[in-house]
Image (cartoon, rainbow, N blue to C red):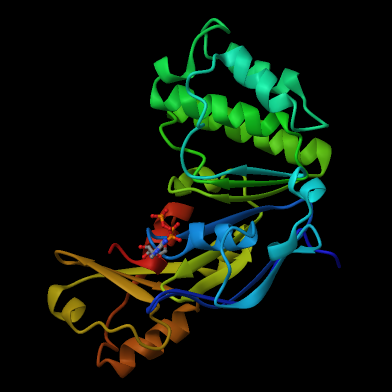
Length: 295
Ligand SMILES: Nc1ncnc2c1ncn2[C@@H]1O[C@H](COP(=O)(O)OP(=O)(O)OP(=O)(O)O)[C@@H](O)[C@H]1O
């Protein structure tokens, strides 16, 4: 199969600081792939390497079939990249920036841009530097959508956006992928939004991967078992089936990728065989925080 993105044995260190260790993942064409992880685990670093902006310490990445360090300009034009932050061209107006960008992209779809801009309720002559943070993000996302890229890489697209606009943009993205067979790699700190539209996820941890799966596979597999009792909670350890645990007062939550029997075996090994934890349902955000920990 030819993948939209391939990362093989990727390692990266900034000086002595190791950030990525043997990271492997692939993104199939036509899928929406969520790259998740707490602050500082290496999501932007991975994207910088994928785009060929940063040379990895070792390993190989390919994007739309080409090595990341040698992406041809014609291939770059097929990649719509949102890199943390806003446009550099704040002095331009809504219409000026559209004209400026359209010159670089042969498949430019101005109607997609103006469809989003019309919802801002601002005149097209309005200058970008006079906009709020969220409004500027909307302009940026409009410019990305209009590129009609085959692969969109959205690093933290939700910067400053309110819930309404985030929902609107997600609807646009879903439509974009469904109707045009596009591929998206997305990072976001608003994890509950990703639940609405990603197909596959990888959860990065410091120098490792906690989980790589379809979203459904992850949600089917990850479980939370809860019990009450401060003394028992004080005996918990991250061992065996216990991927993580969280104790608040008397309440303890155990997070696992295994079944109840495996959790009970791990609790027995800690001398807690008499506990009768109850499984509790979780959202993606609960599960994400559960397996990555609350700092
Ligand atoms: N140019 C750099 N020089 C040195 N260290 C860096 C550099 N860029 C990033 N780092 C460090 O590498 C780690 C990974 O950073 P990165 O920006 O990739 O994380 P991230 O997962 O995108 O974080 P966030 O969710 O906060 O955006 C962090 O600890 C960061 O401090």
